[in-house]
Amino acid sequence: MLLAIMTLTVFLSALHGYRSSMAEVQQLFDSELLDKARLLAITGNGRSVGVEVVSISDQYAFQVWQGDEIFQRSSNTPLTAISNLDEGYQDVNFGRHRWRTYTWVDLARNRRAVTAERIDIRNVLAERIILKSVMPVIVTLPVAGLLIWLIVGYGLAPLRNLAAHLRSRRAEDLRPIPETRQPLELMQVITSTNDLLARLEASFLRERRFASDAAHELRTPISALKVHLHNMSKNLPAGDHDLVQLEAAVDRMGSLVEQILALHRTAPDQYMARFREIDLYQLVQQVIISSYSGFEQRDIQLELTGARTLMSGDQFALETLVKNLLDNACKYTPAGGHVRVSVATDSAGIMLQVEDSGPGVPEEHYERIFDRFYRAGGDRHQSGVVGCGLGLAIVRHIADLHGASIHLKKSSFESGLSVSVVFPGITGNEGE
Image 1: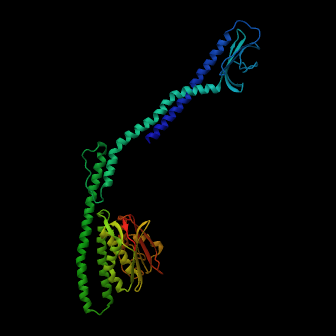
Image 2: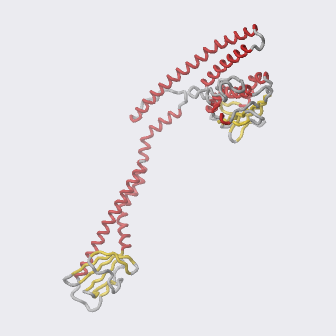
Image 3: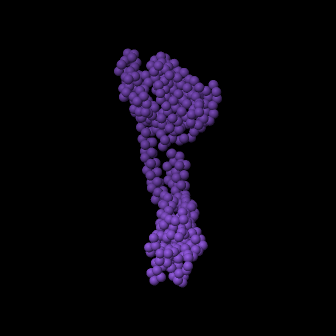
């Protein structure tokens, strides 16, 4: 902005100076024409026989008239009058050029002197004079711009250093910014930022304690409920409807508590992004082994394809992501259905894909299903499967933490949903 304003100011000043200087130079040239005409009119004694022709520069021309007859002229003028011989300035054409003329009338001698100067040469001379005075200002403009750039850059260096310091901090680092050896201009910003960091740390601490304490305290009564339900099942007929509904509600409550704990642990403000090299294919194998009993009970065919694939990530977070995707596929795939899991690499990165043969999700719900506590079709899902709507929200959180993108589409089966998580930054892989 400073450079633009300075350039505009210098340009307007130079333009104004050019115009005013041009007018002044033209006035000087006109005064010179007047003096030459007056000098020509008063020189010479009486009348000479014939016409005296004087050879001068092509830039100038003149005629001296005695009454109605030409008395003296320059070699570049005709025998006819080059102007109407009225006293004053005129612009006329002769000799294939445009001329500025002045006519001086001497009534005592009945004599008229006309002096002329080529306008094109006048303008060239005037511009040369003006440019010599304006050019230094124009030449100093880049120098002034460079000085402004360096001075402003030097003045903003502390602000850039502060911004770099804040960018280099980890998300969980809410320590105050050191106030020692800081420029006076930044002290108000640093003080306000430290105050904000202190409030954020207190708020996150309260949230962390509340979520952790609440989830921990809920585990105990849920475990007690499960024990009592198990004891009650011995005194009730197998498959009792009320007992089945109560067990499902307790399982849903336990799942909700575990999901809240997982979501809390992977929240960006609490997440410790201490990534290490992980074999994603082996990690998926381990999660499948721990979850396989659920697929086996429902006679769901589970397939895994891929090869050893190395990436940088957090072990616990990736296990949670894969487990949630598999749990969703297991819950919504009907008995006897099919679930396919694949790990592959391509130019886009590392892709983890989970597709099932369940009822699928309408395309208009693709974005909404990642919202917390949102379930397509409402709380009472059309599949009859109970849920809390946190699974895919946690998947998106973990994907964001790893810089991954999620893509939804219809599965390759007759029905169902395909979820693809694409991780960037391949560190190494092996073929199948």
